[in-house]
Length: 491
Image 1 (cartoon, rainbow, N blue to C red):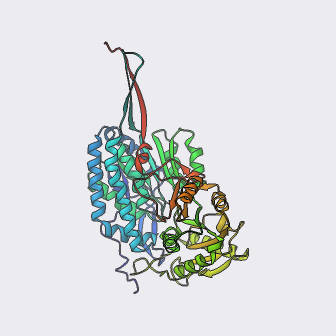
Image 2: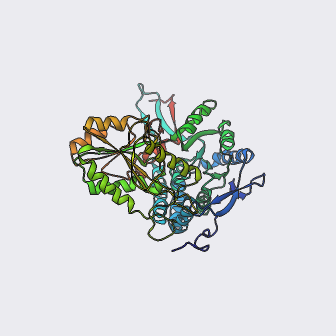
Image 3: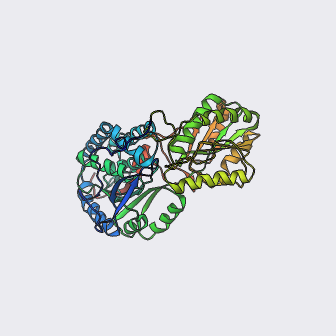
């Protein structure tokens, strides 16, 4: 069914200005950026395109608000977050349509993302009440030793376009729960979801200046303005490893704390005793969710040689059956890539693999017409030196290579400087345990293609990042430890 203009109309009351100190206003320059639907390449909205001047004003607002916000009780902040959670759930369908329109993912996936985003708000609305301190036994009777935890300060959060709701709440909710005020710079490709979430925070009673949003195409200028200022005490970022490395360098001047969730190159290791039906189902989730545009998307399919023909046959059939189209069309399972640059990269990876000896089993082409679509693709005989094995493809490409022994499969999986997520499939409990311990990754999915959840720690090893999000660790990231020695006590 064709998508009409009415179908692509924005949900009601979506802001398009900056949010600074509780007030919505345009960029001081008057400039605006265009947000487009990647499935049609048609403009959706014109959004304020902020500058370093706007960023500095937002920082001053966040710094002023911090002095009062840090003194609110954990229970008061919990109440605001709980109301925000309920508002997100109430607006679930509007938010999901918004995600599909500006990001391209199918509506069913967008609805799942809204639920995932809401789960972080709910989790940290409760976890914020558990920022416990402790007493420490002293060596004498005349003093008492205590350790308490307090909010780190103003937080700068820089979020990507691939999960425009969940990557925001995973950072903003724990920061607010801890008593920090937040500066949010969402991706310029998908700012509308961020603005809609900020409006709901306001409606939930969030104090002026507690959450400030600066949308902009000038990401470096915005972030530089924040990181050059000592008042920003914490930076949390999800994105590419090169940008993360640059943030590490910039943080040194102010000794700012960092949480970095960076690139991945996830192996998907299939052993000869795996349940193939369950494995293929997990492959479709881990590879094709958001069109493969996920840092935890499986990138290298390593299959034990004895089951390679059966795996290739089943995977090709399943991938070829995926329905591609506009995310608002009923039954669509695969949407467009985010932009032309993303499509060009995916097609270049496919071309490079074929030129170096890989075999094409399915797909491999861009779709004609509007939108940044690439057919779901299966490549076999993939080997070292091919871009699909060396880089994060970030697209709908299943690249399959073989291994012979368990030791070889683990070694191939670990042969990467990245260490965010890995997947392994086996029906042997002992092998599952051995492999899970041996994989050099922060997240391991055993017979599971979608391991992420709010109550578990999320983060990577090696070049894939610093710190953890979610779980109790997600709150710890926004708290400072303070030791108090209280002397002069009689008795």
